[in-house]
Length: 199
Figure 1: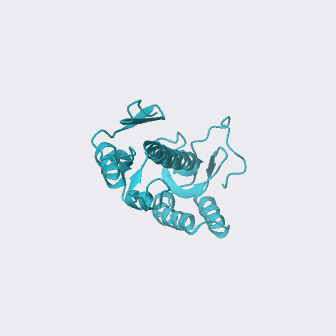
Figure 2: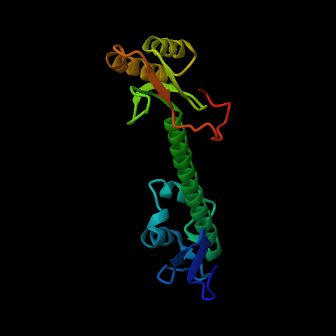
């Protein structure tokens, strides 16, 4: 939106209004505005959309690039494009953060832990193994070590292999003197989980 006196530009985007007051910017006889002063106005009035690539975008823009003077309508186009780009980038970043957090939460629930008592008290000891299905049963220590070895032999990531090997090294002193240990993850039998997830 451009004010009737051609002094104020406002763009509403994502429940926020971005505005530029151009009343101090030098104009020529045709009413066009001096580009260098317009760019400085962006930097002082809208620092939230000015990043280290801003000057590069100004130079390559059809509204300002290589020109000395520009029209208010061209400034409005540039402002709208900048605010849209900022919103899309922020949205993309936020979505990536949410996806990563959800995946971390899923992996945490999928991790199979070892408990030394049938009541499965406490946080449990890590095995580095995961299952997308509910796990809750007892095994002997040798059966557990065999499971871990099988998990290491299956195709998996280097990080996961390393996690299992590290957990095995840590577990052996805890489980070696026991008849049985109990395995459990945090997935309840009724939970909806994608059966295609890697276990």
